[in-house]
Amino acid sequence: MEGTSAYSDGPSGSTGPNGGGGTDEGGTFNPGDAGAATPNGVSAGSVVLVHASRNLPAFRACFSGYTNTLPLPDDKLMPNANVVGVDVGTAVHVGQINHKKAGMDTVDADVPDYDSGVEGGVDAGPALQGPLWIIEEKLARQFYPQGTDRSGWPNCDEIVKVLQENGYEGHGLYTLTGDPLSPSDSNATFVVVKGCLPDSTLTTTECGSTFTKSKGNLSFQLLVTTAQDGMGFDFEGVAASPAVPNGTLLTYSVSNGATPTPGVPIEAMGISPSASSTLPTNSGDFDMASFELRDSKNTLILQQSLAAIQARSSPRVLPADFFGLRSTFVLFAVGDPTVADKTAPTALHFLAVPVQDPGMIDPEGGAL
Image (tube, rainbow, N blue to C red; front, side, top):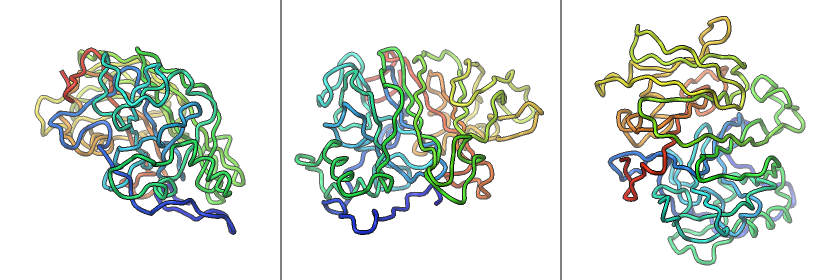
C-alpha cells in the first residue's frame, strides 16, 4: 500500500466508528501561519510529529496519559487539503508540553504558543509515556461532525476504546510502544513515526532492517534538541530514511559552484552536530542554494534547493521568510529514493523545522 491518505474499512464484520463524515475544523500547517506575514518556529517545550513511514497513511496521534484531549494535531490542516492531520512525508508542530495537568485549555504565559496544533494550546504533564496510538486520519475524521462547536466531541480515550472494541487494531489504529516522552522547557522533542505497515510489496530497503512482510515494523522514536538562538544560518541533520546510510555527509552550498560547508555526518535517527553558514542575499537565489547528501563514496543521494525544501516544509510562506528566522534548523531526510516521481510525498526529500529559543517568540505570531 502506498503511503497516501487512502483509507480501508475495518475487518469484515466489524462495526464502524460512530459519528458523521465531516471534517473537524482546521487551523494552519506547521510551521507557518497561512494568515501571518512571517513564519513561526518551534519553541522550547514543544512537540513535533514527523511522518517518516513509507506506507502509513496520514494520521493523528494520541499519547498515553494525555487521552482527555482530541487526537493531535486537532486543528492543523494538511498542505493542499481541508482535513487535519500529519500528512505523508511532513512534520507538524502539535504544541508545547509545559508540565501542567494534561488537558488544561490554557497556554503557558511564559512561553506563548501562538501556532499550536492544539486549539487554545493544551498543556500536559510528565504523564506522556506508555503507548502512542496512531489513528489514520480518515478514520479519526469520522468521529467529528462538521462545525466549530467542539463541545461533546469524543476524546482520545473514548476513540481508542471504540476502535479497539470494534476490531480496528492493526486496521487504522496502531498501538506503538517506546520511550517515555518527557519534554523540558529547554528542549524541542520530535516524535518520528517510522517503519512500515505489513506489506508484501515492500522490503527492508524501504522500511528498515527489522521489517517483515507479515508484521511490518511501524514504530516511533524520540529525538530531542536544544532550542537555540541561531545567530547565522545554523542547521542540524537527521537520517530518518532507512535508505540513508550512517556516515552520510550533509553539506550546504549558498549557490551553484560555491564552496560547500564541510560535510556534517548524519546518523540513523540521531541529530547531528550543528553547522553554520550564510543565506543567499537575494530572494531569487533560494533556487540556487541547496543541501546535499553524499555517502562515503561521494555518491550523491539527494540534492534539494532551499526553495524546494521550503515548499515541502512550509508551503504557505516564502523561502526568504522561512529560512530568515534566527533559528537552528533541523533537516530531516525522509522518504524512499526508489520512488520514480520525485515530487511524491513518499520520495526521498528534506524537511526543515526551525527550532527557536522561546525568548525570541512574539506572542502576536511573528519572529523577533
